[in-house]
Image (cartoon, rainbow, N blue to C red):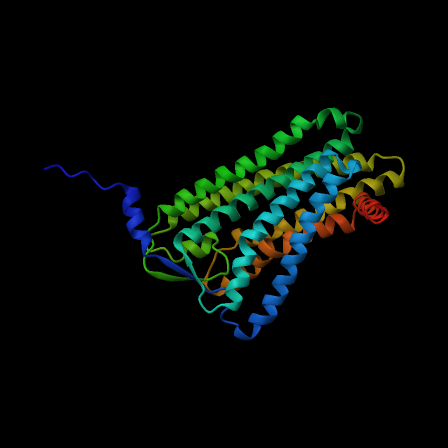
Length: 320
């Protein structure tokens, strides 16, 4: 009698059905659990209010219906999403004893974090290109940055984020996992998951490294090229007033880019050893929890248009 071969997927299913991960997180520092819970809760509250507030202000203020703010509202959406994928689980783990997360739950968290981090990387590049067109071709700006192009650039960022994440997931799922394993982080990120695999993770690590490097280099190239042209254009400006105005609009964007990319490079450019897990965890805190909070603050505090829009909305709300 002929038996059909079991599929790779069913074997994978059998292997992973009994797999449980325990997110170690900050459990090695019991005295810090409550202060960290309060700190992260405060940060998360600011993140949610800041990013959703930013989206609302941009939608409600006709003056902010420009490409720059269209991209900024998507950046805020991405920030809100990926901090929501990570922070609630972290907060839960800081107050409950049971830090287990199912294999599926862990993989899904990794998948969504990848989508939003990769999307943010390219959203920042798109915003640099937008500034480049605004400064270097101001007369053609509204023609070049048409609604169609803006939507296409945003859609391309999301699409690439999703494609890259499916690639990462595919290679993580080729690994064999067994039993209950401790994950050396508060979030299911690649290095931490791969470190507990029961099979050789070499290929998975190489693929992620190549993808992360390509993403980093291509987005940084777009950003650097845009800013080189911006600086050249600004230097040719006859008045210092014009220069100041351009640099002040670009300053917020440059601040965000510098923080985001330096942390990503630290995280994926530094080889992970046992002693560097704390560094990985601190970097993870920055890029999954602190950056999403900083972006709306950087853009709103540094930006006259946003401040004016808030004042206007408040005045109209109180007057009505």
